[in-house]
Length: 441
Image (cartoon, rainbow, N blue to C red; front, side):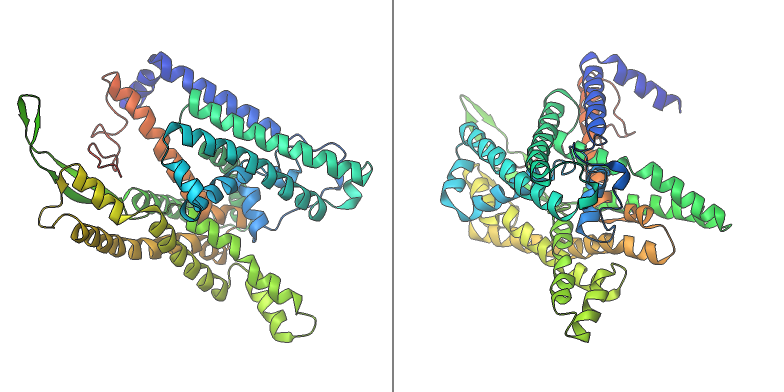
């Protein structure tokens, strides 16, 4: 306890770090206030539950901290920007123009950022109109509907751009990745209510011991998620001796870190986004076919084994797909060869590329299955009798985003401490998984 208090004092004594933390907190407060400001022209008392906690809308509402169901000016949050960023990344793999911009350094990055912002506006306007048209009940609209839809779309676009600007300011002036931090804050904001709701539910039925076991199980799941996020397969890379001026620099051994879960949370997001398709398609034929009606009912229930089997399959498939587009073994092998590096026992060139590809396949397969297991943990927790909001923190998108953002923020804080010659947050002086020597791609 004394060491923890000393670490907090050290953090507060670093002026730059203290200012960054305070600015981060201020930005978080501004974002949360915006999440409760209801769109003009809506009667909040007539708003019912706008989302289904089982579907994609429930996922969106979780990621924006309830702003979606509140019909707030930031109802769409930062998600349109995330969608636009993913689209630009995929275009970089398929369209030569975007691929060229990615290789042009700072100037190319600025052009891509500008294109991403314009695409964000287009995506927000489209999603905003769909949200207002299909989600907001007409009885809750207090003004002319045409005027409401036009003004609502404009305000939603402004709210998303405001959230994006706050995220960029947090990255520049605060602590951690601002965009990820805003998503995390939206998720964390619902955690206290989920804990209280679960405690009241178990307390009313006299199952306090079961509630304690749930907390312990949640702790173990978090540890498992941290281990999966931080797990790295390090491939040794030896660099040959080099002549620099009149000196001979001896070769160094570094490591190429390949994460077990390279794709992060993206396969779960993609899988969740596609899981509404079976029930939607089946519902179109439900009136004429009993089979279609049964399929619609099965895939509308996120605790059914059919839903979770398909969900796990999609996650595994997207994990391999995202890993394939994120890591290029040929490019890594070429960069190592140009830098005078080689993997001991493996010839440079194509053999090195094949070796790296084999390692990727070996670590991606178990990583994909473990990621699928984390994704279906909330369904298992719900079957055990937990409330759906509390069960959502046992895995899936929410838990992985929380773990990733917290670890990234802790690493940044620790870097400040080590730079000022203070002890790190961990006894080892370095958060596990943060490598000192990295071979860049």
